[in-house]
Length: 439
Image (cartoon, rainbow, N blue to C red):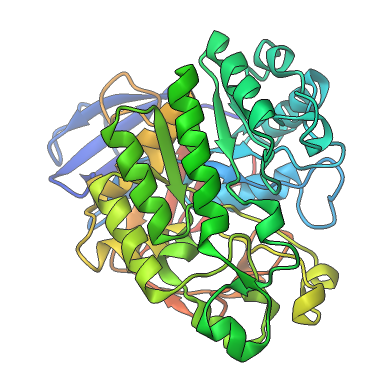
């Protein structure tokens, strides 16, 4: 049984602001005081004292888009291994996508994933339910049953596939209104992306790879924001990747349409130029885009048009990834590198401060997913879901040091700014001194 430990965190800069001491006790933030001003005795044997001088304290990060692969592809990832990776990345909650085997399209399957997350205990695992049975796009899944299950599903997505039928999409948007759910759309017009391999443009022609046009994403977003407006429902756009998509979402929000959006860390930092290596680690859905797209995505995240950073952590075995480009699976892992990538793309460029990072990686994702107990302010009485980050500790990414079962990271050998030092889930350390803490 896990023992209750009191933590005294000294001199942490809350949201990157003034330094303070924090006391974590019984799963809650019990006290916040000026440095040296807490009532607790830091020398007590019942207290673990952490020197957080120079560290930034943020609410625990929340990932709206994680692939944990279990059930069905435990060779690539499990709920436990993915949860360990999430804790190492500073996350206290992740939304597990539905494209497992079997698909998470029933109450029984989402409850299985939810319980596996509780048993692992490193982060809160909140299942995402499929929109359609088997991700087939033909028949709505058991949306109501999943919503009323023990997992209390509120986010539904066929991610990996687009809900391309407008009638099915409308029915899904209408259905989830009854329990304040949200449809998270993988915006990809399938007919425009058949056999597509990379971003469509001059470079795809030079490399001889079938292009993936921006309009394939933008056309679905345009349709779906209008559907969401028509039925008065909530719509979330997964992994936005083009400048045109940012403009469409900005326009929709200006009309008062209830739409939110996410961007991945890799789409904020990496560009299509990396595909010239033909290294399948850079093969991802949606594809890496142009420099101008990256610039627009950063600007959209900075001004709030894009609400959240979501990793789209997509583990694959070496057999599925270490092969020729055309045969390789799409996707890259990202939980353990998210903070460093966002620091490089947004903080070091002056586009976001650490309070802004907290907003885009904790507050807003929790609100979109209707996730209780996460994305809360760092205040006395709130759940002690926290992450401590060293903004000055650069980290070289080493595949051998990753917690994920898969190693398909595009950042191997690359030095990223900022490092996660500690993660606390309801006052219990899941990561301490950069090492995952087993129960």
